Length: 158
Image (cartoon, rainbow, N blue to C red; front, top):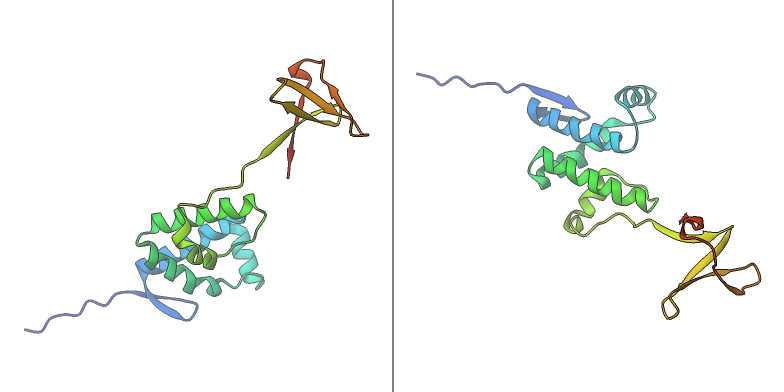
């Protein structure tokens, strides 16, 4: 008796012929990367038709990421982690960035948002020794703050 060979259905992505399950996982990774960039599925399709996005460029690195991560879930988590980290620092990122930063993924944290106190547009300083707020005027003089805590404006500094 001869054994029947079961042919696995293969799909072509870019220049690679891949098994169907692997191909869908790679597509999921590439699509997820674009979702973190703020694109919707419709935008991805339109831009790839116009050749603004060359989809096959991302396939090899997505396959490497999938092999490195071991599972689709972990690969998507890694992309999310890098996206959050890069956006907080106003950096650009690709799937290759995830591969390069793989060993430091646990240590990557988004940049903290720093808020500074202001009173009527002038910066304020807290004195630990005197336990008082001081307002620094435009001439650099330190004036004791006599208002209420609710009057202090907290502005985000970037």
